[in-house]
Amino acid sequence: MARLAPTSLSVALGRPGIGQVAAPLLRLVPSLPVTAQVLGDRSCSPARVLLAASAVWAGARRTSCSKRCSIAPFHKLLLQPWPSGARIQMGFQAHLWLLVTVYGLKSLAATSACTTESCEEDDAALVQTAKLRKGDGHQGIYRDPSKCNIFTLWEKDEEGKDVALMPRLVLETWRRHTRGLCNDPVLVSDENVRELVPDLPEEYFRLPYSAAKSDFLRYGMLYHHGGIFIDFDMVAMEDMDEVVGMAHTLDLLSYSPHDEKCNDFSSNFLGGRRGSPFFKKVWEEQKSALTKHCEPADRRRQKVCCFEDPKLQCHIPWGGLGERLSHKVFLRERPTSAFCFTGPESFTPNYFAYALEWTPLLQDAQAVFREKNIPAPLDRKVYHLFNALMHWKTYSCGSLFKEGTLIGRIMNKTFAVGRGNQTSVEASSTDFLKAHPEFVEAGSSYFTGVATPCVTGRPSFAVCCAADRLDLGTPTLATPSDDSWDLL
Image (cartoon, rainbow, N blue to C red; front, side, top):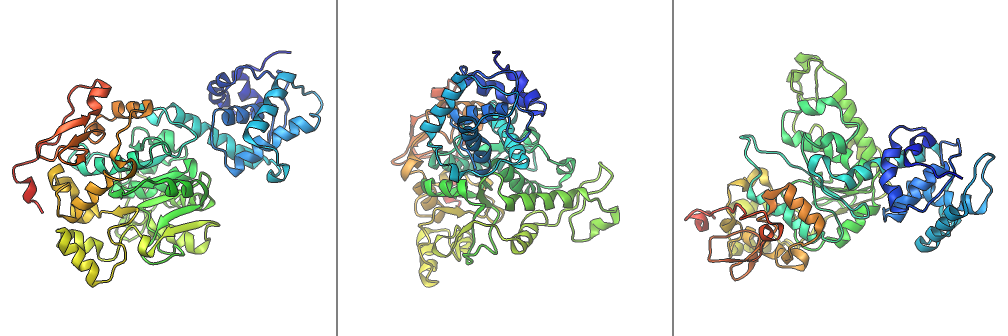
């Protein structure tokens, strides 16, 4: 019997290009021989099962859709005769038994009929998983498919300058507090977005401002990949084991100031499983809103409008592609599973924005919280730091970590608790830092009485410098001005 060549998988599946995805997976399990004769059944052919088995063997997390197309066929192959014309060698059968034993895939009751639709969705997911394993876009960063992914839009500012220190520090809190649970963040830009979102409409590149791009991308990104999408002013304050676990299973994970039913969920932090029906519905309505073109005269109206003329920017009212649209979908068709951190767990305590702007000293902020009877104002899992209000890009490291200030309390705490005080030596993080050297400073620790991820202006020395580990030379460090301690 002949082995099935990796490139034959595309023929077996009837879908061009799948063989390219399967080839690296097959190399992980080189001793899985099957015959060149395969089932014509498009829903679950032996080649499809081989692809799914290889992915499971590689440690990929499988969703309920995947289980229908990977687990059920194991039992189909092991317990039932194959249709006429198909054969399987004993070696392949033995490997399947081993997979069933190792991964505990013994419950037939836990599997459902494998439909063409479910398998096509699963094939598309494997394509996307392979792309993330290869690297997010052009960056060449290895991503473990068994771990979650964290996404954020990453663009230069309006003046074409690199992203400021504060957003880099925020992303570093997520890198540290999800270490071992998630891959390094996927920084989404115009250069790699097409690879990450295969059905991205061309109108995306005519969106007029970054917030509109971010509003548009987050639902499509999470629908295709699952994980967490954050704005770069959402700082992680503790290890995110609970949050990541919820994002793996729920259709929607977010936070709300007051509503535990998520009716007014915030989109600057979103999480959920790949293939979430809620994310799919929002994503489809977003694409429809962009691709149904308006007349040029409609740009004066408060509605989402893109135009036939490719030279014209789309007209997007603030939030028009975000919560204005997604909240309507939510109220019309509520997700099967949704959770919002709210009340004393909300990521925006009452009067928090007021305190950041008007009472920046810690003791004054605490007085406001006591007067307003705000529960646990300084003990939240995540904080929204209101970048649009505070303009954090103007702040130096010294001002962000200044003792006795509200922002100083937040920044010093997140880099002191749990995994927040640990820099990474993983190979994948090395790849990330090489691709994004602007994170080298934030990926280090500098001792100034306490460990900080940047130079505060006080006498300090590097206790763990990513630049030395990566052989990248001396990192470019933000040099605080003489009056950096008087900014607040």
